[in-house]
Length: 252
Image 1 (cartoon, rainbow, N blue to C red):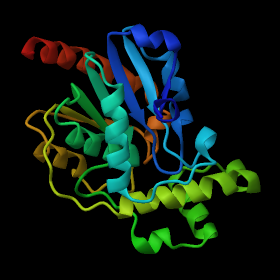
Image 2 (image 1 turned 180 degrees about the vertical axis):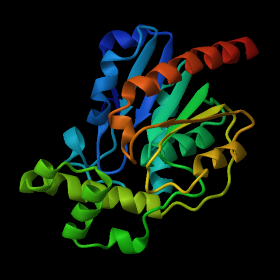
Image 3 (image 1 turned 45 degrees about the vertical axis):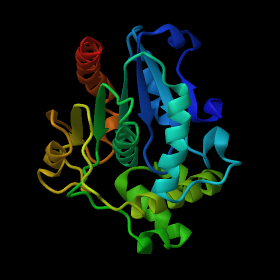
């Protein structure tokens, strides 16, 4: 099962002392982190989490409920984690998943969570009405946010793959009910200066979800700033992972 859910950048990463699990955003797949494979240092193994219903898992039905997805992922992570410190990072829906996985994995918590482009309060979440949009409505929403390049929006084959995944992921997000749960690790946040889905200061609401909030780093760009600012995010995230992984080891 783990082979379907986890896609390491390099097989040699299994020897790296630290691991970074990456959660993709709605409508996408593990391939959105392709650029990160050349940015991570040798001591950090990058592992992309691939959800069903897209890319190499497109033949599998996508999950539409967050609680179900977290339950399955918790079993998969429990079997995968070892004694190495690890971090979780996700953008948009991926940040929601990283947060809820940290809550679920409280017996073996990450050393750090990186959350990007999503906040537990002040983020415009999809609704049941959005999920029920016609296909062209889903396409328009993706294009408006920059998740679908013009050439992709004009390609029926691409849309046939992207729209069902996006609809399912919107349903996952729409099913979320905030319980204000705290996590047992530090959180660092990243956002785009012109993100239309985030209210002013929304990212600072993360301070109420952890005893150690490390602040929000703002980058140029809109909701999908992370696609253009991967180097800057990685340059900030990796030193924090090393520092908090070392602290976690000392606490054992």
